[in-house]
Amino acid sequence: MEDKILVFQCKKGSTDALRRIYEKYRDYLLVLAVALCHSAETAEDAVHDTFVGFAERLAGFKLTGSLKAYLAICVANRVRDLMRNQQNRAVSLEEDCPLTSNADEPSRTIICNEELQQLSSVLTKLPAEQREVIVLRIYGQMRFGVIAKSLNISVNTIKGRYRYGIDKLRSILDSEVQK
Amino acid sequence: MRPTEKIKELFTESKVKVGSEFNNRILNDTLAAFEKSKTKEPADLQPSVWRIIMNSSITKLAVAAVLVIAAVISITFLSKSATPAYAIEQTIEALKNTRTVHMFCRDWDGKKFEMWMTLDSQGSPEYCYSYWPDYEVTNISTPMVSYQYNKKMNQVSVNKGKLYHFDVQFDRMFEDLQKEVQKSESNVKVYREAASSGSKSLIVAICGEGDESWKVFIDPETKLPVGLHCLKSRNRPGDFIRDFDEIRFDEELPAGIFEFQIPEGATVSNIDDEEKRLSDPNNGISTEGLTEQQAAEQIAGQYWRAIIDKDLEKAKKVYPRTNSDEEVEKKYQKYFGDYFPSEYVESGRLYVEHNCGLGKVLPCILMFEDGRKREVKIIIRFRNIDGKSSCVIAGHFGYPVEID
Image 1 (cartoon, helix red, strand yellow):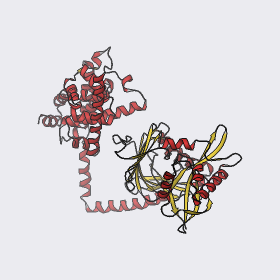
Image 2: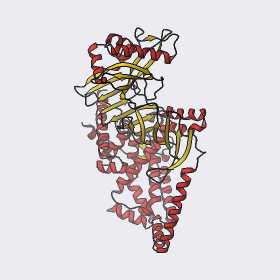
Image 3: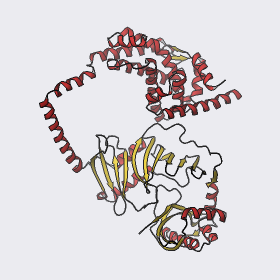
Image 4: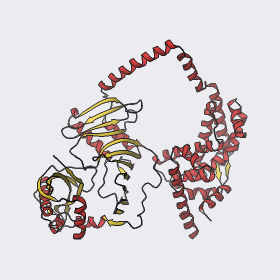
């Protein structure tokens, strides 16, 4: 309910309400973005672009579901676009994108704790589309139907991606335990 | 611990520490964007202005008249105007920038099938998946290993590398069109045509001459082909793709589409063993002093005589795909059905079929035991082993097709 009120106040022109939304979801969206792309830099850009885009569209914005889920999908979409651009440069995610994007100047960046680094490096071994569904399902706590609708893909495809992703995760985690 | 639980646990414990400068940058940009958006007129006001105007019946009538005139003008314009700005090179270049292709096609028997492909940086197919619902046949071609699975027969053919007989050369089709233009510009007609669905008019290129002609639909914005129909072709029924009804680019690939697991109880044949026999210099015929056409006709003659005489040993010598007689018999039974060839009438011109990676294709006309004439295509592979040139029959292309 609080989100609906915040959006309503934003639409009335309240910058405080917008600031509140930003503070409420910033960290959540950053963790989500890092998990999706294993790159602090890309995650920062994705979250930045999501909030800027959200602010630009607020006048015509109608909240029909959860604001948290809406923002999470926006971040996922943005991450996908940014990664696609990076793919064109043909770089390896692990080599090019450390999880502290500018370690010498910590005030300018985000720093991920050990768990997030571990999580992100496990997830990066999955194909992007499976990773996306797993993150939105487990971390975003979204239903398959909601993910499918948001990504404009059939529910069965989403379920398939989730299943394949979980199977792969199992073998990744098992092999790490064996090491 | 289950993977979902482990991941949940890691998510719960995941934290980010946000630098103050970074935080201020996002917040300031967000608030600036918000302030800027306040000065814009909301978009949803616009339709109401339109509705006010359209409330007048005179306005409605005038608008309708304008629309009719515009439609007539645009049809005339679209059907007659050429688009000299378009060049096939633009399509070749645009293909290099795409990564996935999703196509809805029909083969020469009118059977629908669906294909997914990933393209490399040159626009050439790398991974390929196709599925024929009517035959329940799935093809998966990857640079490492490929499969052809016939669900009805529960049979799987496996080979190393890309699918041995299935070599869709999407990029080369357009390079061929480019060559047609270079040969003679009159071979290619370019104009615009309204799309059958949607409002966008498409660039249409009719390419080719004689017995080969294609109609290609190009998106005027992206310059990518969105459809392709064969008008005339020497590739007669029994061949592979006739029409690309719809071509979509850069769609997200369905998960695991290029993965395949051999179903339980399936009969598996290893094509790589067959490949070894095809590379054996003791098989096939020498092509020394012959043109490819002459060599193809010679080997075809030997092969069909052997088939007509039911001399499987001789047939295996020029077409060494199978080892045991039982296997050979089964194959031919499946291929020809109840009636075997009874007379070899003639052969046509050897040609390159872009969907066949095994070799060049030679069409042959044969009389069958039921008194009907059919065309059967065979694939001729030319080899150079230890400096000696030779050729071998590498397969049949498509199924026999009855002709008048």
